[in-house]
Structure formats: C-alpha cells, structure tokens
Length: 245
DNA sequence: GCGACAG
DNA sequence: ATCTTGTCGC
Image (cartoon, rainbow, N blue to C red; front, side, top):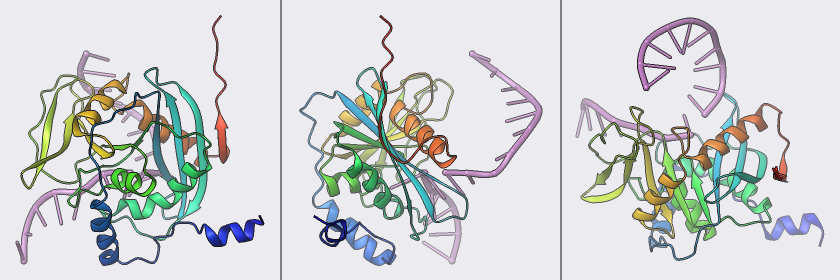
C-alpha cells in the first residue's frame, strides 16, 4: 500500500489545535476508561519515555528506552524528532508530549510490559496525567514518576532511602512521595493505567539504583538528550549485549 | 481573590 | 524543559 494512502487512514495524533476547554473534556472522557486493577503478568521489560526540547523551539525529541527487568539493562530504544505548538500548561502536559512519544512507541516492534513516564499517572487533579492518558490511549500498562508535585498534599517522608508517604487529594490517595535516596528530595510515584497504586510503588522501588531517578526515566532522559545533541540517531535501535564469558 | 502549578 | 560554575557533602 502506498505511504500516502496509509497516512490517510492512520493520521498522526495531533492535539495542537485544541483549546484548554476541549483538552479538559478529553481528559474527563479518558478517565472513564481508566483501570487501576493490579497487574497479573510478570514483568520482563520496562520502558522509560521522555522528551527533550531546545529552548524556544517547537521541535521535540521523543524517546523510549526499553530495559530488561529486573536487571534494568537498556536493550533497545526508539527516537523520533517531531514538533508541537501546544504550550506547556500544568495539568495538560500530555497534549504537548504524547503525539511525539506515540510516534516513537509505534515505531518499536517490541511492546514493553510497563512504560514509566517522566510526569504523573493519576497524581493529577482529574486523575489523567500523561502516564494515564497514554495508557488509556494505547492499552499499555503505565505509571508516572515526577520530580515535582503537581497536585494533592503530603507529609514529607523520613529522610531515609525507601521512606514514602501518601499524596492525598479530595480524600483519596493518588500517589506517593518516595525517597529514592537518603537526604535527597523525593520523587512522586503514581499508577498510570492497568496497575494499582501498590504496583506503582513496588515497581518504582525495584527500579532505583545509584541515582535519584528510577532507571527507566533516567535512561530515557539520557537518551533523548544524546539524540537532541546529535550523538544518537533517529529510529529504532537494539543494543548489542556485552557478554563477559 | 489567593496560592499552586508535571515538563 | 533548557541555560550554566562552582561548591558542599557523603
């Protein structure tokens, strides 16, 4: 089938012309399809998804890095250069980043068991952060890991690695403030889609190594920055494993 | 009206 | 998010 025809029946997702009011309506609709049922399947791969931008540019560099689990070794990555005019508005990050991340996702021949986003899942005023939005859109199992709080209230967790506290909004637990390293600011964990609050916390803890950020989002951030600075090329790539015997 | 506000 | 140098602490 000619490429021109294919594009007509599978148009790219484009949120650029939406108003905030329309975006809010979309979030409310997606929320009705959200599932927070506990995971059943065993995790063998987990991916991190992120975007890198040049200041004042509409060009976005999207990437997804797939890691083995529980080893957390990068085994493949997908990079896509795209553009967006939807501005950054707190609470609407998905409309700016998802179109590009979706391209990177669809370009991959493999489907990771979990996708972790640099942003939130249900830790959002309408329970529809970028992780949940992407999950409902694709059916993927997703979660969020944000570096700053977006919504809700929480008590500061003890300053020890592994300590955590609930983030609560309107009387319900919507995520956790998790101390991934002692005496370092916590990260904010929440389920996106097809997993429970407890699942998201367990997975986040299993993904912490030497840094504040869990490996999936840390690697995704690293890779999209290498892409933006010309040190990695667009496309899908598998990483040859170094065998030491 | 005031404060908060992922990336 | 990105732009930036040194500096403090484990």
